[in-house]
Length: 199
Image 1 (cartoon, one colour):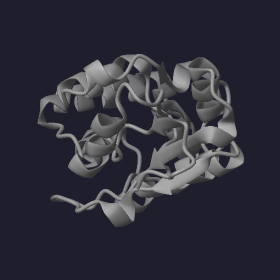
Image 2 (cartoon, rainbow, N blue to C red):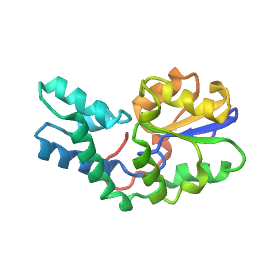
Image 3 (cartoon, one colour):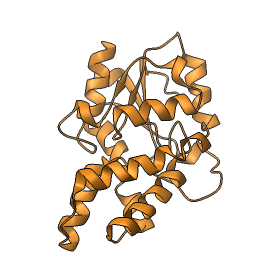
Image 4 (cartoon, rainbow, N blue to C red):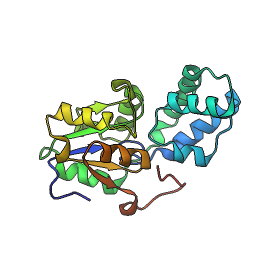
């Protein structure tokens, strides 16, 4: 998976480094029942990489619903955190992290919130490998805009063209390409465990 010209690495978290997507889906389904909005797998995987707040705003607009996006997002995130101890690292991608730790600069670029992202990384035992995390709170434009990954490159002090981005969502891969980086779709390289979660 490692590109020979990569001089720095950026990793998405959910579904890329950590097998959290089935847990996020459960949290979304519980939130949809509680707050009365339609939600299904197609929506979940199609919008993977987008912040929860933006997903709720999109659902509200599409279905003409009056939803308190911040309240729904908070409930959804709390539901996920309640399940977070079940999160497992994805071995094929974590192997790259371990191989390159101390050799190449590395950063995390996520559409999630900072607090939940660090909790996810800690639950998977990966916190010692990362100091830099760019979350949905650090940029105005989210994936597929390049801003998340460009901010990762800036914080690492590396040119965007030298960064390889590891992603499992179409929006994230588009963001990497828009940033002029080396996109790496992990999906062909990973043996999926359990429920469908290709995003």
